[in-house]
Image (cartoon, rainbow, N blue to C red; front, side, top):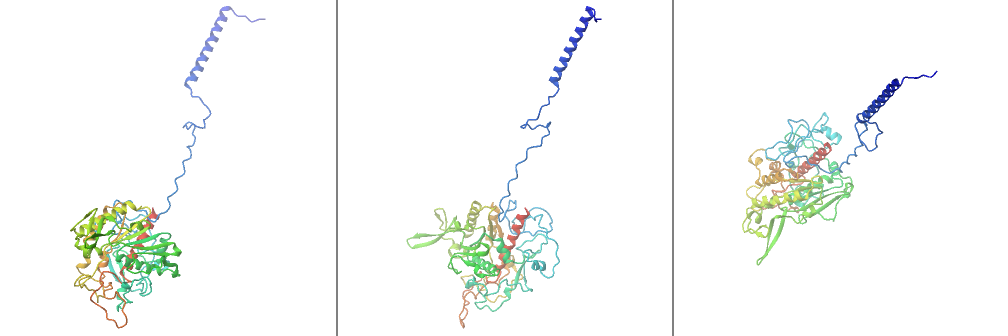
Length: 485
């Protein structure tokens, strides 16, 4: 039996189906417009919704090759005091008495406490190049103490083949020996025991150069003797051109074969250029205070430099300043020696700033060394013979030459962090340490002339050994700070 509907009912069903279809079509279109589409992630897209990990970061750049010294971020140069890490009473640089900003104490390099029996017993036992670290230490203010333990002198008189006759006081007949038995004691710490083998290890592959006058040659010979002591095979140290050390030569290079390093000396009396002016009467010396010394091309080759000047500025034409000082093409008929020294030091400082890289070079300036003439000067009958003990009290201990204040002023304004080895007050004490009348070898029975005495240079062994102890400690500190960074 066939199922049939009235015509009106059929029309009603068709309209319902059509409306439903239209409704479904609208819902589909709405879903297409407003609902998010899901698609497979693109390999080039970086979307939060995809939760993909970020691309791998590029590897960090390799660390720079280690250099001898990286200066601390100070606006002022390393100055009059070096700081011994340990306890601290505050952060940041401080001003010392002489006005140079000193080095802030590193937060690292904390030593473990050690029991001591005698001076630096643990150091001596373990062979470590460390002094007592009891906080900050101004190395250049202190006193000389008599060595009761037999450590000084650091080498025996007559044992070193590199001491100039002028400094060989014991071999030249000086009868007393007490001047050999003093060690420098900074106010708040002890200097580390000098370790020549460790010093050479720190110089491995490098060039150390001392530049200056005969006072720096005095220090240079001291350093050669100190390092000579560390070599089991003395033939592994030699002057590269076979030259003996004499005051007539101005350039020496000593090679240390096992360490592939050299220790050199370059003579430069003023650090600025000496010259000659030719006229009808002949020639006369001049000093170009606005030009660096002709030997400066050698300075660039060194990794560590120790500069000095000073004593020649008190001699003859240099002191009188008549037709001597020159700037550009101008030869001054009269010029003040102190102002000339200031301008010369500025010339040196500018050259250091323009030619030395603080990431690759370490530069010291060794301060003025005191002279002790009585009753005159070096060329007017001054004497110092018969002095056997350091000065203990008196105004001389606090004297400070104007030239050193100029040096401080120049270094303070430099960009390169020069380390000032301010040995002036340290040497003020040591009126007993000069050759005096024992600066020349005598034949048997020959009388000693007392007419001309050397009261500015130093006997070796003697006071310059302490300057090299200070340089050694500075190297230890500088390289330790670099490792701490």
